[in-house]
Amino acid sequence: MKEIRIQKFISDCGIMSRRAAEREIEAGNVTVNGEKATIGQKIDPRHDKIKVAGKTCRSAEKKVYVMLNKPRGYVTTMSDEKGRKCIPELMQDLAVRVYPCGRLDMDSEGLLLLTNDGDVADKLMHPRNHLEKIYHVKVRTEIPQDIVTRLNEPMEIDGYQLKPVTVAIVSRKEGTTVLRFTLSEGRNRQIRKMCEKVGLEVMRLRRIAVGELNIGTLKPGQWRFLNHAETEYLKTVD
Image (tube, rainbow, N blue to C red; front, side, top):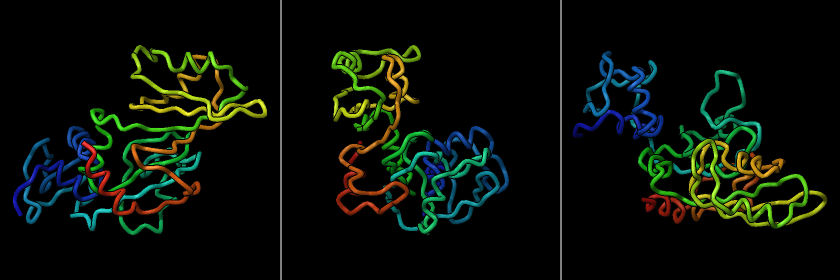
């Protein structure tokens, strides 16, 4: 086996994405044979002993690709120092360690992709790919069309000019409206901040699609392996 860059090795082990590995290396949490690693350092997986936060890295098993319907109340992390519920609690019957490709905040729910394939994870999370993400957002009150028009117009949040967002009404009933948001980027709490800016109160926020992958009938808290066609689609994202 030839030498490879340490951040790629860590990613291939299924511990975290390559960019996350670089952050751990910069923080001094990665060692090679007992000495602190540097970004881009080449290692020999056959002979070098690599540790992240004191734990030894070993080559990952078969690459797996998973879709989870994350319920509200769970944080999109593998552990949490505050003792909050984390997504691994929903996947205890999955024998392989995977990590999330992107995030959903604790109060949001819906489609979350996870894998131990670091290259695919990096591609999915890289801003250049602009994979469309679709959300159904339930807001209080039956909103008029002019509010929807404002949500479709150029908007600045936290000093940043958002990339175009498409918003449409899905349904109106009993003092609520369900809106469909289609985003090509996903900034921190973007939809909630957009709604707040036009005076809307978000009652429920659910992601239903990422690119060509749709949550379908998967119930909250359930997960499944991606099928062959879905896996091949992820690998073509570039």
